[in-house]
Length: 150
Image (cartoon, rainbow, N blue to C red; front, side, top):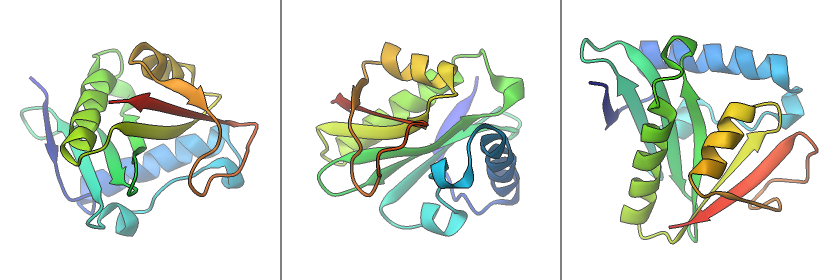
C-alpha cells in the first residue's frame, strides 16, 4: 500500500523527480507559462509538501498545498509516469484538500495547463470549477484556473 506523508522536498530523490517534472512541463509550455515552485520555496513554513512512496521507500509522486492567507493553493502535484493509473493522483489530492481544511480554509485553488487533460479531468471529477486568474497570476491562454469549496 502506498504511503502518503509530509516530507522535506530537499531530499535527493524528490529533487530528482522535481527536475524530471520540470523537464516534462518544459516540453508542454514555454517558460512564462510554467508556474513552478523551487525547492527553497517548497520548504517554507506555509507549504505542506506531501510525498507518495511505496512501502520500500520508492518515490511515486508528490503535491504541495500552500497557505495563501484567505485560500489554499495546490502546487507541484505530479505522479511519476510509472505510477500513473493507480489512482494515486486522487489520493494525493484528497490529502491536500484535507490539509487545506485543517488549516481552516473553505476554498482551495489551483492553476494547471491546458495540455494536461488527465489532470484537468481529475480536478473536474473531484469537484473543481473553472475561475479566472487569482493571486499573482495573469491571464494566460495556456493556463486553466480552478477552485473548489471545501
